[in-house]
Length: 296
Image (cartoon, rainbow, N blue to C red; front, side, top):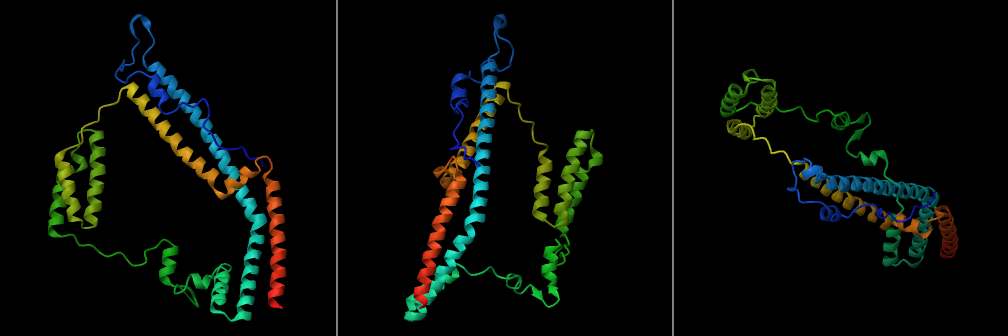
């Protein structure tokens, strides 16, 4: 596994400002038609900038993902190879602190020994994790229900108020799908009645009142469609934001403990693991000798 080095923005990628500086204003030639005498459309430069930014972003995403995989793999190898050594060092530190406390009887030494032992306590067993959730026959009914996605308690029956029933009847009379004049209107009514039924099923009087106001206000007016130039500018802005997010991910990877270790040996990270393992083995030998002295 070879470390690819720090993740940098590809040279081909324009900065967020470059496409805007090179492109015309969105209102210039917004209809997308050819200029006089067959001149190129004003959007062509915008389209080229978008294509260049898209390609550069793809390359940058590949670089970030490649580095993420390298960090993940190195972290796994680090844990597999060095994890037992770190655990052994923690255990030896606890044994040494306990031996010192037993010999001195000093409360401060006892406190330090307890702290050292707490760092190497084993994971709690299943019974401890499920304390109060298990008996001799297995899981309690409440726990079994949660683990099988069943309701812990039966759902309470809801009896809608008189006002809720009145609002519901009024809404159904106004918005029933059978009153639609075309398929689009039927779909809108179907979606709306589904929300009405859900609110009535919960007895939510305030929401039913809000739905009545929403229906009486009528459908929301259709939004004006953006021009081609505006769509291209919006695409450029999205690409710039995406690149900024990836840059944060890359920075966090590089500054992480594993990423920093990778930078110490970019060409041969496996050798770095061997060197750390040798150092840890030496520390283990030192701790074992110290424990032997403390226990004598």
